Length: 201
Image 1 (tube, rainbow, N blue to C red):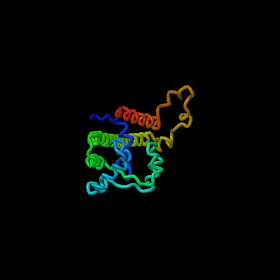
Image 2: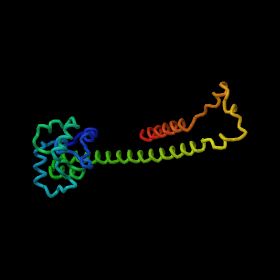
Image 3: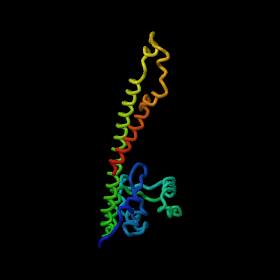
Image 4: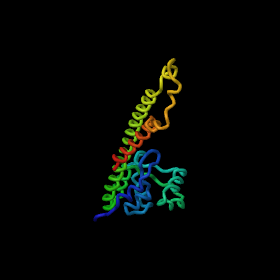
């Protein structure tokens, strides 16, 4: 038997709760082709196979937050039971205790979805670190530029300085408008975002 399950469908059911990437019992039951009641019965019969890092039960507050933020889980609002959450290893163990051909086959797709999400989050973390490094470099360059462009005290207090010489003619002011440190900073930040967009394509 060949089961077709879209990767997008599985990825949409992966949530982050208590800092862990998990899938709820209702979503796993739908993917594995059983009822939520049947899935939880098998889990209870094999409770020793599900340590704390494989499975945990949501609190009432966590359940309310999940229902409020996940449209496909609104049905849980009318259930008095608090759902169970399964980590990647727990999801595989569920397939093992169900011991059905569909569950075993779909569990492969579930693991791939967890791996894909982990790689995606790792890529975003690396991009965020690169952005921070580039931003620090731009800030340092702009700081040096600003400090080097400050006029010295002697240039303002020179005893032979002609006050009229500091007034430029209107026709020459266009030539004097050069990009300042702020403009270079904007260009630098735009370059960073362009680099990020290029890297994630």
